[in-house]
Amino acid sequence: MNELQRTLIGNGFGAPPSHVLEAVDETMAHRRHPGAPHSIYEEVWHLAFWQQLALEWMGGKDTPYPEHASVGFPASTGEPWDAVRKRFLQRAAELSEIAGDQARLERPVVCQSRAPNPPRTRTVREQIEGEAAHNAYHLGRVVLLRQLFGAWPPPSGGDTW
Image (spheres, rainbow, N blue to C red):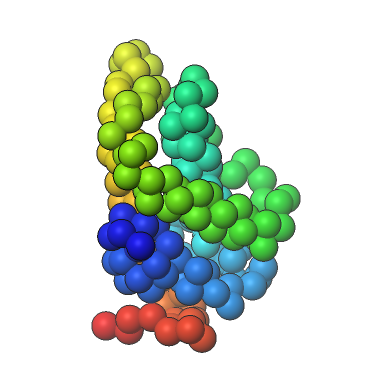
């Protein structure tokens, strides 16, 4: 496993994503904390949304860039938490698999941009590095929420400092 793969699904920047989300039940996932803009559910849904967009762009699909940031967060919470969690982890695994394919990493990817900016081209590696950084940022927010809820570390462990 290379470092990019480790960052996506392993112990690359902190606890693995599966550990960060471990033992989060439906109630905790939807729990709001005063001053926090999103719940754990919304943070993870957001990650799964952007991972899907990245996978579509890497697959050559001309998926438009969201018109507004709110599109990247759920309009409702009708999808069960476990389905959202699994969707995020599955897409992270797909990105990790691509990150392990050295021949594919330098291929160009056309990524849509926020209007009126034109699409930009980056490599598969750059696209996945962006997703890894984005995941780390939002998973850090999930860890903070869990800490505020008194639900950290998870059973499989995680840094407490």
